[in-house]
Length: 207
Image 1 (spheres, helix red, strand yellow):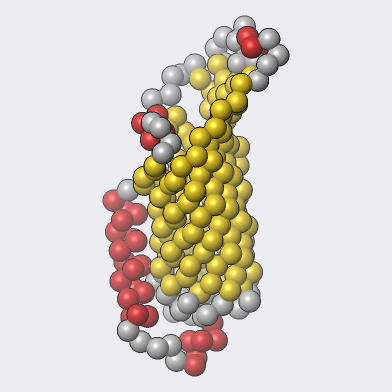
Image 2 (cartoon, rainbow, N blue to C red; image 1 turned 90 degrees about the vertical axis):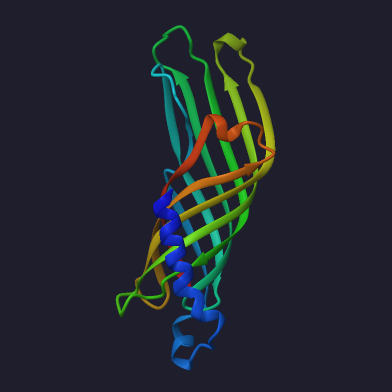
């Protein structure tokens, strides 16, 4: 967590000149672009203090985003994402109960960055996500006599992360990033029992 805060601060300081200066015509060629991307990874729920008998299976998360670069150092995005984790008891052959927990998010992101490092096409960035969340739980198994129990809750989450982006050319980009939950609201005791974190890669198109 401390490293995320440090890199986030560094990216923010690198983007500070954009609030005081106007971009030159040369900068406008590579900045002020709109882009979209799709991502996949291991971002999801993980149980704190998980018993050894419980198996935790994280389904690869999926995300889609649309963003706009207001300068070389600052972008704003809107996104949707879905993640799912399944729990089962592998030590008890007579208990086939499964619990699937899923999160659906729609939100906005502030993405400050260092700008391109030299002529490498690579830049480091930080991310702060604010999202509305739908959390769903589904319980199934023979102990329920063929029935499935469902419950859901809604709330808000604040996530933060850091990443690296490579602009392959003027249009295509690839990213790798790590995200973690910083705070949540109206999700009962969510943060007391679960962590929400992980890494993902994304491929995008700038235009």
